[in-house]
Amino acid sequence: MESRFHRELDQLRITILNMAALTEKAMEKAISALQKRDLELAEEVIQKDRDINLLEIEIDRSILKLLALAQPMARDLRFLVGCQRISLDLERIGDQAVNIAQRAEYLGSRPPLPHDPAMEELADTAMDMLRMVISSFVNLNVDQAVDVCQMDDNADELNVAVLQNLLDYMVNEIPAIQRAVQTIIIARCLERVADHCTNIAESVVFMVKGINIKHHCEHV
Amino acid sequence: MESRFHRELDQLRITILNMAALTEKAMEKAISALQKRDLELAEEVIQKDRDINLLEIEIDRSILKLLALAQPMARDLRFLVGCQRISLDLERIGDQAVNIAQRAEYLGSRPPLPHDPAMEELADTAMDMLRMVISSFVNLNVDQAVDVCQMDDNADELNVAVLQNLLDYMVNEIPAIQRAVQTIIIARCLERVADHCTNIAESVVFMVKGINIKHHCEHV
Image 1 (cartoon, each protein chain N blue to C red):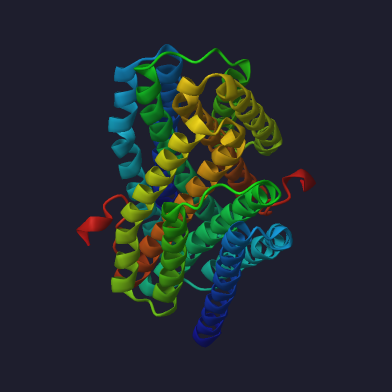
Image 2: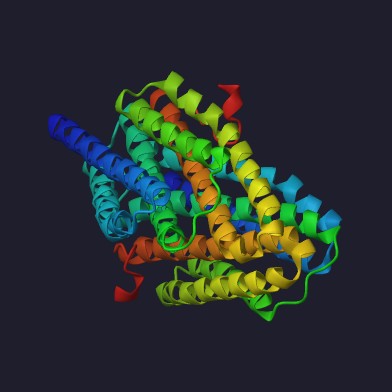
């Protein structure tokens, strides 16, 4: 019984890593579709979100089965509860990728806005956080998870900078208002991806150390 | 043991209802602060978010304790897993209330934008969904939960309508651009509250019937 339980835990871990890989890929493609004005790539992100959603359902089911199968010990129980949260956050990162891809389709068929370094930095920050937090889960590395939490303020600041840049721009470029607003929404999507990465990082800390750092990440 | 377990389950249910009541109150006040241009009320929402966050931590802890205390039977296990998800969604609704309140502070100290019936209807829809989904949890009422899921499309459409109205308005009212963008963000916050209510409704269906209706709510 014990060893079957741990084999199934390993399988769960692999399924979450698959889901994380699909989510990372979706975000990479959504950002690339936006930057390269690639409408086909944007459409691909939208179509493939279903795969992420199906994995979420599979993970939910297997966590419930594992909780019912055995009375898990403290660490295994925390792992299961943490996995459930991580899967929710990954699914929502997938939704943000779709959101960005939909707006990339809108923007990619219209005249481009001026390049904004803050927007590029925000996209890079969100992707760095996503890659780092997946790695912190793979290695159950608390230090790396805490680093991810600390990057979140930077994402917030970049989002505010993009908003301000676009507000300034719109005042003088009335025909670009709709494109600018769509870009503001994309920046918010990226900032939300950073938030979900922070949630995942908190779940990793919880799994490993059994402490809850939600709402006061700086106190670890 | 069995009866202690069920007493603690009842206590958990009460704590979630407290959290739900605080969240509903926060959203009511945030919307009222926006509509009545009441800066003090907005500040109150921001200050009180801490209480919601503390309840989330308490709920997390008690779910983990209950999972470890006994090997819960199928229905109790679903109740615990469902409670964990509901608490996450309630906490994020609280965050959206803070988001709306912050923007209400900005807008309340500047000239008002024209009244938009779509915005008012969106706020009403989000609040209706929140009240209904809390009631569906209290009574474990699946029909009511399914009704909430079906209201989500309406919230999405109203959000698009508000966006379009404000884009049209901004083109002719350059000095109002920043206020209009903040209002577009508020509409997105309300639409996200509707999404979280839909998630909670899905959790209620899962608790009662043991089926997962995520990603295909219409198939119940």
